[in-house]
Image 1 (cartoon, one colour):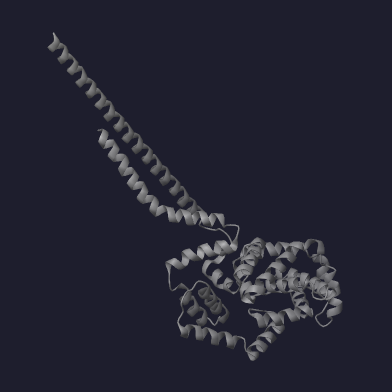
Image 2 (image 1 turned 120 degrees about the horizontal axis):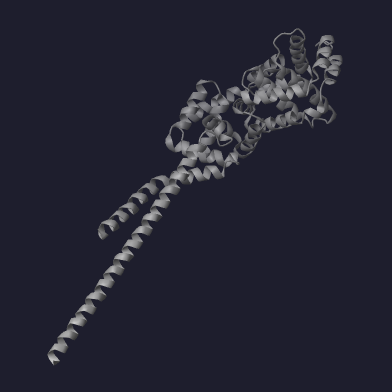
Length: 378
């Protein structure tokens, strides 16, 4: 029975050791992810490590998909990621990406997209954003948006209050831009991007809801309705002055910070990178995290967000799974230590029992020898 108990403890050590060898790497990765949850750059690196280990062709497959979709910027972002990760890519893939980037950067393409952004107010790349920002800086775009949405509001029609609020804020920021000789331009560009993302349906629901509430707070609706009723895009000076009077600057702090963070993302990742961020963000904190990620990862950011989604910005979805791995490792380690303790105790007890038996045998032999000597002497 004694040796059976020792064997059971040894089997426990072997089983727990084998299980711990399987669980420990997962638990280590889970612990690292938990430790990096407040650092978007470190978090994205850890999650990329895990993702790329599962699929060696993931980067090349995404490059091919981006080229098919006509998104040379995203394809180039994946090339930068491959270069950083020492992932080999075929020469023909690299050449096709290079050609696509050159075509997208050509003068004719830029001029066409600039004109599109200037006239329509919609942007999805650097050129069209330049046109959109130019239009907004000259108040054409914002006046157009305020007058259009304001008339919808006055007539009781469906109104995009977010676009209305962003355009109203944009007019006020544009005035500050002129006064500060460009000092507020980053905010101006950021607000334009948010507005454009809303127009083309690429603004995340959570962020749209938050921005909508913020936009409502910064606009004096009755005053704006009166300004729109009397204003016209053909009288921009008079109309702008009336619209600015409806802007509550003291309520615009959060929206201004959002504009700055969006611009920080765009400066490092380009317009499409900023649009990708606005699509996955659920609130202004996500955008601020994306800005930190973009400053750390640069041109690789679009590829990272494409692969990880919102998981590149914060710990989402897998917190419970990570906790299970850590708990499993802790339980397995406890089982291993308990098995080692039990084995040690049982081996020690067996050794002590053996020594005690040996002493008893020696004492018995000595006693029998003494009795024998006494009998002989008698």
